Length: 184
Image (cartoon, rainbow, N blue to C red; front, top):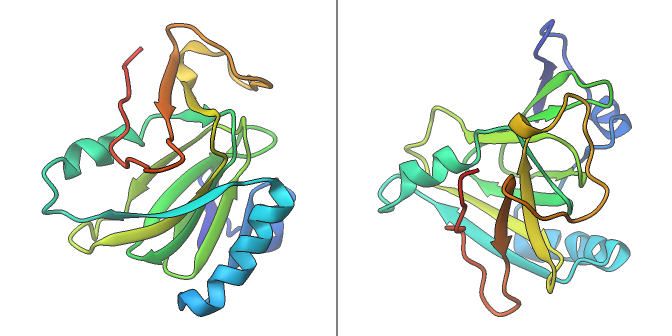
């Protein structure tokens, strides 16, 4: 993991990232070694399911999928990812609303807390396939709210409804990476 402040380029340590409320850890990418710690996290935080998402440039909708995540948004549930291959970039608002840029690579675990504005994009090496494990609460509506309609420093404390909510429903039986996002 490499993390910097976008406003001044200074490095951010894992401890500083954790102090900002963004959980960062590393696990080995061997399933026999990472499954136990991730299942423990699921139990502690009440998460119900874990699945894997695969993205590769030859996918029919690869470019469209990549574009879905670049806009600043927040979720009313935690966004939990463990990267198994490939690389990506989370840009996350700090507690004082500065941008933190976090480059995640294989073995990186990141938890962006609920109600924290962020955006995500793959690195320039999109030619490489990316695989990550997602951990989610099931039986709830996973929502994202774009920042453009919210004042700076806004935080959401509960699920809401309205035109500026983008709904994405996760089924307990099957998860779809290609969410049905509705522009606001």
